[in-house]
Image (cartoon, rainbow, N blue to C red):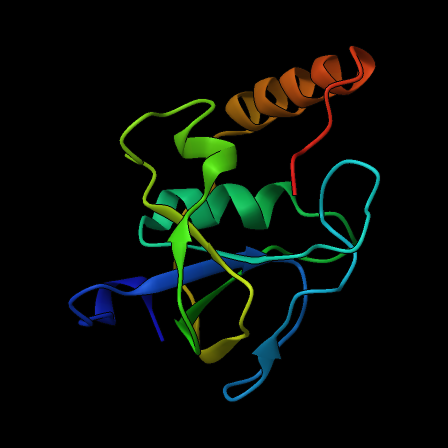
Length: 137
């Protein structure tokens, strides 16, 4: 499914490097893509494609970043890692759930960030890591 073909009133996206198929479930308890890679207590999604692009670009692992159209299978809430800490009001439209996300389709045709912007973000994350700031679960 191409990004331009998505017509859901509020689609949710998940950015990763994992290769998934429609019907697969993204579940909590897997190693986090960030910090010390502790098991994540939540699964994350965004209603803003740009937030999912960052997720796909910054995820650990080899291979290309991937973005999936997902549907939550249970309650969701604002992601406090972003909304309370960095972006009050949730302009990134980032959410989390303890319940699985079901993969609906892979989103294709999305544009990544320019290499210099991606490097700036990686350098900022590295500075935070060096200061002992870890991702909050």
